[in-house]
Length: 375
Image (cartoon, rainbow, N blue to C red):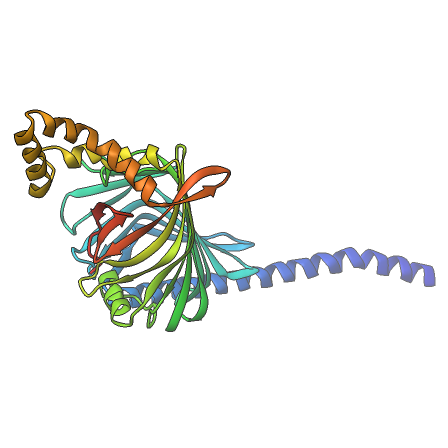
C-alpha cells in the first residue's frame, strides 16, 4: 500500500513540474508583454518631449520584439527633423534597432543601418554618410543618461552629388560620462574620443593624411544638459566662463607624433581661446602639410609678405623669388629651433605652445589658421 502511494507521488512530480513551468512561462510572457507596452509608451513619451524641443522622430513602420529575454524596437525608414538647429535639418536612415535586456533595462543599445542622409526639410540631400557598423549605448534613463557611447566602423561622410569626401575613418569611438552633477544641474562631463585612420581632406591639407588620435577632455561650466541647440549651449558656456580641459591627447600622422594638454575657453565672439602645451616628434615632416609654400605664394601671401619679397627683387633682381622658394624650409627650421628640446616615445622632439587667440591658431611663432565660431 505504502509502496503504491510512493509510486503515485513520483508519477505526479513530472505533471506538477510541467504545470509549474507552463504557469511560469505564462507569467513571464505576461510580464514581457507588459514591459514591452511600458517601453513603447516610454519611447512615445520621449518622442513627444523631444518634439516640443524641435526634434521630431518618425518611423515608416515600428515593431516591438525581442521576446523572451529582451525588448527590441525596430524602426524602418527612420527619420528625424531638427527644427531647433540653424539651418533646420532633416535626417533619414534605412533602419534603426533599439534594444534592452530584461536584466539590464536601463542600458539601451541602438544599431543604425545606413546610409544616413542630411538635408534641409523639403530640400535636396546635401550630405550622405555610410558605415560598416554603427552602434550607440546609453546607460541610465533616456531623460537622465549617466553615460553615452558611440562607435562607428569604416565611416565615410561625403558631399552629395559631387562625391567629395568630407571625413572618413576606419574607427571612431566617442564616449561621454558624468563626473559630477546631474544632467539637470551643473553637469561636469568627461569626453573620450578615439580615431583610427581618420582624415578630413576638404577641411585642411594637413588633415588629408590619415591620423590616429586618442583624446580625453573634461567639459566644465554647463548649467544643464537639457535639449537645446548647440550654439545656445556654447553661448551659455562662454557666459559662465566654462572651459574644455584637454587632460590628455595623442595624435599620430605617419612618423609625426604629438601629445598635448591644456585648457580652452570661448571668446565673446564664440571662438576658441586658450593654450595647449604641445610636444611633437618629427615636426619637420608635418609642417609642409600646412601648406607653407602655398601661403607664401604671390597669390596667397599677405600684402606685407609680398611687399618684402618685392623689396628684395629691387635690391637684386630674382632675389625675391629665391627667398620665397626657400622661406618655407627656413620657417620649419626656425619653429624647431624656437621650441624647447624634448623626447617623446624615444624620439627627438620639440615642445611648443599651441595658442588659440579668438580663433586665430598659432604653433609657436607660426600662424596656421582660424577656427570657426561656435555660436
